[in-house]
Length: 115
Image 1 (spheres, helix red, strand yellow):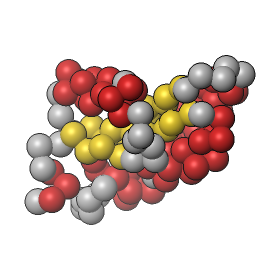
Image 2 (tube, helix red, strand yellow; image 1 turned 180 degrees about the horizontal axis):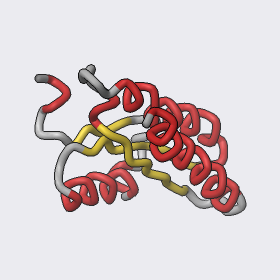
Image 3 (cartoon, one colour; image 1 turned 180 degrees about the vertical axis):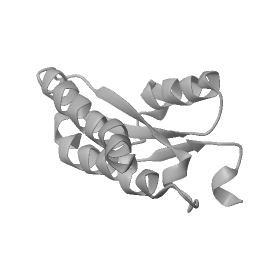
């Protein structure tokens, strides 16, 4: 189970970033990537060590720092809500309204991470 969670939650994000950044680096205009993680990686939960280890936010922050020079912003949402709510958060992070937001994880979880 651990290897599967790491493959889906971390390796897939890393590989997608690799290919998205290669394609986006060619253009000179601002670009945005929004990764989707899990709120389970932000809080301790019994029986879920793989989620804590999957570190989508860590990969997101590293990519944001490395590719800011290419005018690429990289952020993440941490799901814990409905698909529509996650989509709205991702849309905002990708919009010009968030043009000064990079390297951030936005939990959309109804307060789950503070309970």
